[in-house]
Image (cartoon, rainbow, N blue to C red):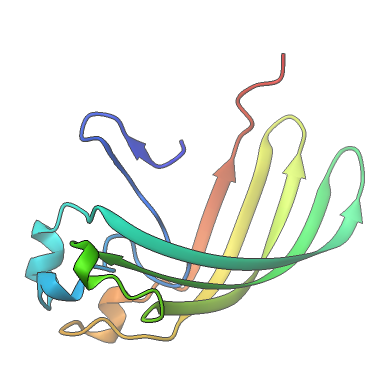
Length: 138
């Protein structure tokens, strides 16, 4: 539920506005065939800012509207790391917290930086749905 793959030992680091798995290092190459064979990169950076505004504060349901901006990239080697060359996205969304179910969210993200060698409709993802459950609380 957190994005971990325990069998492979990897973690999915998603960026709203981009489809999963399309942000690959420049040294991997361009195009869909390289995304299919890329099993992930050991080095990544992700910067995120999110501004939430409460719409309804109630014990049964809490609703927030939000705006966000994200930047991130991934690299295969430390010699390639450039924290100023990032893929960027921004958008708006909403969160609703229900005590019995957890946090539900929907976001509309717009990706600004194209993925070289791919069609625009192949790497962009506009809507993102999220379900965040709290797994604790004894």
